[in-house]
Structures are given as structure tokens and as C-alpha cells.
Amino acid sequence: MKCVLIGSVALPGAVVMPVQAQKVETKVPTQPSILNVSPSELTPRYPTSPPPSRVKPLPSDRDILERTEETDYRVSALQPDYMGNLWVASWRGLSRIEPNTGKILARVSLPNTSISALTQDKVGRLWVGTYAGLKRVDLRSSEITAENLFLPSKRVLSLLTDKRGYVWAGTDSGLALISPDQGLIMTTLKNLPGVSANAMTLDADGQLWVGTLDGLVRVNTANALIMKRIDNLPGTTVQALAISPQGLIWAGMPNNLLVINPKNGTILRSVARLRGKNVTSVGFAKDGSVWVGTDNGLLRLNPHTGAVLDQVPGLPSSRVLAIATDVGNKLWIGTTEGLAWLMPKMPSAKPHLAFTRAVE
Image (cartoon, rainbow, N blue to C red):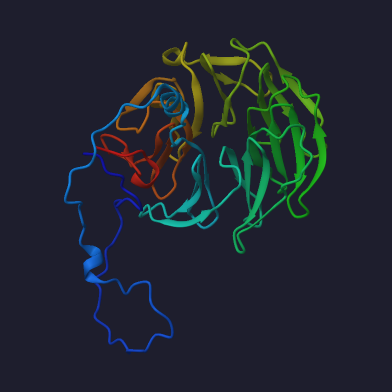
């Protein structure tokens, strides 16, 4: 028997408060209440005769059934906010959760649910990149704006807020620099070497590094001019980026994980255990360890040697899409089959049941 569990998941740290009896003042309702349900309606009624026998679908019906798409449970982006909560972008919608309890605090209805990236600007508005453009969500009013920006392409792949508070939108056809207050594009970089802005990160100087189809590009955040290009990387395509506490670039690729010196562009290390592996996400925790998501699991590495310290079991899917570290004292993992979380010294990850497929 299968069932779908909906709602929040009980996490460590959640406290259940006893319910105190209160005196309730009885009022005469002005209109029928939806809660006034007849007891007979709560009793299931079954037909006296058995249902008709099942009939196999006709060929035309079978074709329709085979083409029916199942619900997509992927969690493609995670974004901590300034209140300490976590925004979860799944292909079923956008939700904000309280990371200590897992409770869903808010949901935002978007016209396009193919969400690919998230970022929060300096005043707390949430920017949502989708495969149909860029949205700006005012969390106080839930108003969705900035839908008609003329980006180099409507297919947004990455988002980042720089140190000045400006928003960078990476698409499959270049970059756009956006004024978050006015919701206007300040400039575009359509001739980006490597074309596609797959991933972005900021270095210690506040300059932008972009992972493309042909390596890495450093962009001046003040004027959107190209400062440096690293295009001699094995595997070429960079699809995940992170800056270590030491200021080194960790670049995830479809067949490698590289550690690069941003000053001179030299490759310091190719992580041996990840050669030939598809690295999809990289993130550094406060303890200095580096978490690496692949399409075949989640690993914790020693940042100095690249040695594998842990391989995490218990994920809803081995295909990891997003990582958020140190949110509610937990690591959060977005996969193709839902959301999971992990705390220190836990033997395996736990799925958040509101974002996963039906369980046995």
C-alpha cells in the first residue's frame, strides 16, 4: 500500500507545546460553516454490487497513457534568506520552510514552475530564474514583478547578488546586470566567451566568476567588462562553482572537479575520486569541509587533500541538483526526487516528506 505524506517533517529541535483548554465564546454564525459536516458524511459508503471488471485500454487510450507525464519532484535550487529560513524551488512550486522544524511557512504560485535558480537581493526580495524568464517576488505583498525583462535569453540558468546589491542573471546566451530596485537591466554581456552562464560565484575581491561551456570567465562587477578567461580546462564545461575560504575556485564539470588558483588560472588539483564523475553542485560548510553533489551521490571532502570523508546514504535520489550548507544547523540537499536534510553525526540523510514522491 502506498500513501502520500503531505506537510512538514518532524526534525530534531522541534518542540511540541501542550494545548491548553480555553473558554470559547459561542456565537451564532451568520452563514453556514464549512466545518459543519454531518456525521453520516464521514462514513464511507460502498456500492452494494462489485465494480465492473477492469478492461485493458484500447490502443489509442494506451498511447495517451504512455505520453502522460508524471509529476516532477526535482528540487533544483535552494536559497537561505535573511530571516534564517530556506526557500525551496521545486518543479511543483516555490516554498519557504522553517529549517529547525521543517514546517512550510509560505508558498508562492508562479506561472512557470521550471525553476532553475534563486537569489535574494539586499532588501529581501526573491529573484526566481525559470526556463521562461526572470521573476521578482516581493515577500511582503507576494507580488510578482519584473516579468518582462529583455534578457539575452529567457532560459535563466544561474542567479547571483553581488556585494553592491546588483543582481546578475546568467542565461544560455549570456549575462545580464540588473538594478533590483527598479527591476531594469543595466547592461548585458551577450558576447560572453563560452556563451552559456551555467554557474556564478564571487571571489575575495568581489569580482564575478562565470562557469561557461568553454571554461571560466572573470567579469568586473562595476562595468561588466571581461577581466580574465581560463579556457584550457580538461572537459571545458563548468556547471558548478564555489569559492573556498582560502579564495580558491572549485569548479564542477561533467567529468571532473578542479581546484583553480584565480590569480594565475593554474589548476592546483583534479580530485582523483571525482574524475569521470558528473559534478553538479559544490558548497563549503562553516567547518571548512566541502560538499560535492554528483549525479551518483553526495560526498564530503577534505578541502586540503580532496580525500573523501563521507558518502551520504538515504537521499531521495542519487542525482543531486542543489546544496545549501549550515541552514538550521543542517545540510540541505535538492535531488531529482525531492528534498533531504542531514545533521552532523547522522548516519544517513532524511527526506523531507512534503517534497518527495509517495513512499511505501
